[in-house]
Length: 219
Picture (cartoon, rainbow, N blue to C red):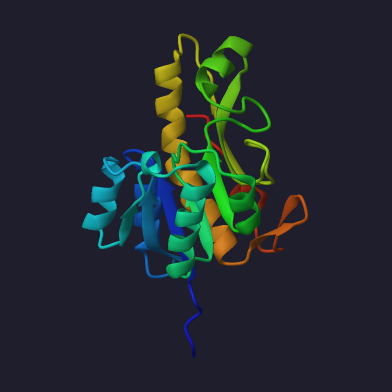
C-alpha cells in the first residue's frame, strides 16, 4: 500500500521560533501528515534558525534590510518557497507585513498563529489589550492569512481564563503553552485534508470533533 504524500511545509520566523519548534517536534512523528522542509527568516540572527538546523531542516536567511523594497523581499522569499516545492506556509512569529502580491500568490496556502481569540484584539500587544478590556477568557487562534491583518478564516482556537492578578507576562506565558498545542493540531487537520478552506470559512470532515477545532483549557 502506497504511503500518502506528506504536505511540504515551510515555516517563517523572525526570532527564537518556539512555535516553530513545536511544529518540528510534531512533524518528527511518523504518522504526522506534514513534513517541515524549510525554515526561513527575515533576520539572519534569529535564534530559531540554529534550532531548525540542529533538527536537520534546511534554513534560509533573507535579511529584509538588504532589499530595496517590500515587494523585492517578497519576490525573493517567494522564489525560495517555490524552489523548495512548498505546499503550505506556516508563519511562526514572522514580523513582516506581506505585499498584496505575495498574499495573493499564497492564498489558501498560508496560515498564522495569533495570540488572541480572533476577531478580538488584532495586531500587537494583544495581552495588554485583553487585560484593558476586562475579558474573562483570552487565547490564541490559527487562521489563514489574507490581505487584511489578522482577519483570515479561523482554523482552530484555544482559550485560557484571565486570572485575578494577571499581568501581560503571566497571561502570555499561559497562552504560549496553548499555542504549542494548537498549532501542530491545526496543521495536522489541514495537512490531512480534515480541514479545508471553502470560500471565507474553514470546513471540517465528518470525523473531526468540535474539540479538535476549539481546545479549551481552564487549568
